[in-house]
Length: 141
Image: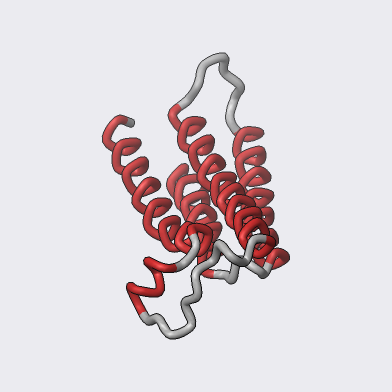
């Protein structure tokens, strides 16, 4: 029951929050909509689940899972805020941003400002981190 009603839907919401890493960093509305809607749906789902279980004074294993899932969703929103701030900072200081019009592939990534590479790194770091958490979580519990 818990697998169908809690674990899988929350994992899907975490994965859905990562789609903002592929949205252009200038699309503030789209990225915020993805991040905040996944956070809101996760909070509602967790609160509905907590209503159905008896209250206890200790931390349950499922509380750890839901807390980490909320943390991953929140970190994806925080990543967007960081990228947005850095892109605005670099756009104010245009002399810092290298010219990359004729570059392709890996050369373009190496020459890009950090905020553009931050999304690319997040596309790798977030899924690997969540996968490691899930493996350790289900190994322990």
